[in-house]
Length: 467
Image (cartoon, rainbow, N blue to C red):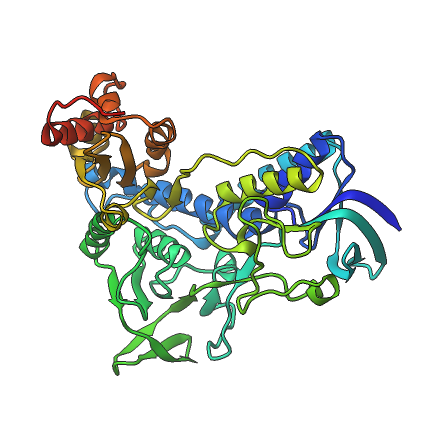
């Protein structure tokens, strides 16, 4: 029986970052991955594939140039599923190669197989060839991620009714698609396929979507989706889904019937903990397979067992999962772990992108903070004109009392890159004067920060900060 300082189950963002961190501290680390290759959900079915698919769709469809050349413009007239998959495979191969090299360079042991607890410190690993291994760890980090929620009433067949994992393997691009679930995953795939001129209908029982995002940003985003003829059926539920003659028919709770080529069910995910035999370790998951942890150390109720990444729930981002894994690994091996900065960016890789950091206007109101907003539209920037942008919005919220930046919210081209300027100012407790007094490269979209800063400054008046 092999003994390790840290056993990591899963090699996604949390697992790989945690494993490498512990190895750099001189610890003996084992990573157990049940997939065919290392990388976890993030590399093979989640973050990297969906973002690669998005970039490929925008490039081949000529989406970014349509502002100049019209909606009929295409880089490639006939785009196939194989066109999308070709670039995806190249990207995935590169990601796996980099990760395997990182493991080798840091002397991280890793094996393929299904892991489950025998007791709180011992894990059984069943390899593909049937060989059974037993390993023990002074500490264990569970970074198993999530898998799509697949309700029994949905007639999944992997061709016309799919979950988000199966979507990457489709043989042909559908002419029409219904997406059930207006969460982040559903919205990302709905807008990606819409950019390929698939007729998309988005259905969700809730009357609103993306409730954690600033309402003004969601309103602008919603307008853009409707403007390109996406159907948003919010507050409606698909009660029955049937397949017939290569088509799918949906019956909604209001009696409406929809016939489509393909249905993507993206209404939630489940923690991939059902095969871990958690009871043997004294652990219990909730009804969605997620584990409860201390938010500062990521320790479970069993002191030497930790969990990080999507399996612990919100925010379920690759970026935050990496930090969670790093912190958990440091605590697990007895090293000091500093708390990460208060504000982190949230990115939604839809078409258009949305990214946010800090407080929304709704949260500022709830806290009764006197505030003012500054807004810039990308079409106000010279770079926006050069790129042919008619849409795009950057919004900043400032405290009237301290003049400090409270939140930055962006919808439009490059939002997930632009947000980091606001993130830095937030965490360094900067004020509106930073944006007014500093010079930004010209012409750039980042110049929108200065425009929005001036907009807020003009409304606030030239009053010195009380910091």
